[in-house]
Image (cartoon, rainbow, N blue to C red; front, side, top):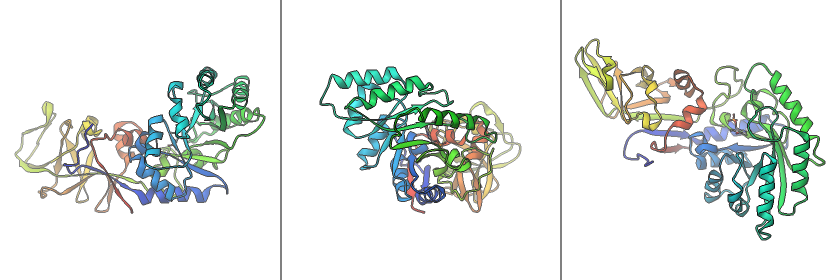
Length: 374
Ligand SMILES: *Cc1c(COP(=O)(O)O)cnc(C)c1O
């Protein structure tokens, strides 16, 4: 998608806040624990390269991404740190992973055997760095049984083209009040790790929620995602006793302001009819930008005043009800602070009936990301 630079709608990312969030997390961790900044999905919509830079400035010593392409983006941007690809990469593409010194995730035996065979057919391919994924209860990818895990371990450690760098798991409920399932997963992870004849360099289990509420789980790396961006991993379920600063703002401007007489329809379907004479503003953002139609009825901030989104959100534009006339070009804040008032990503997520992760990720590439170092 083409990015709309010639339009006043912007995602503003405060990079220093990301740096501060990482630094704070690091200060809470036991000595020697590393932070790998999770910058998948374009840094949760914030911009992967800028986030990686900010996280590195705060002390992150590695990165996690979901896709091979996301890892390549970081290498192209000049990052030489360890990069772990969390999703499984098709064996066919692994020469790229070798060439760029990535760590890839090994989640099952059929994949590993295919990889081994492909590499064996190409003795000059180089060494593939791997991390074993343990499925301790997430039910997504990974080894859930000791026998398979040990077979994978032996297969890797006996093959000179394969290099075991780590073992890790992922928790399904670390952001919930009830820690029962978390404890079960933790116990299962520890039990499976104990099966390995030798612990690899990286052993890790913590996402943001685990680092915040479970004393970093077990291991020597934290895969820090959403809380690095300043968001509470649990949404509102668990209180956050941490000085995290939300990094993302979404802003635009009024491009038309008009006094509309009573009884006039606004937007597709005429779902809104002015009940009296009203000042109506038009804002150049819509569902193609990831500002979904369901945002109708929510509000934005103009001069610190909440203004309702009225009528259907269009593909590229939407209308809001203003308390008074404002000049064209007046700032509109959809997420973030405006004259002492604030709209959080969480509030948007709640209106949509989803989680803040999704709100950030769905902001489309059409919106330029701009960076402020404060
Ligand atoms: C996305 C992801 C993370 C980061 O999770 P947050 O909740 O954002 O901290 C960590 N580990 C894995 C395997 C992931 O997929």
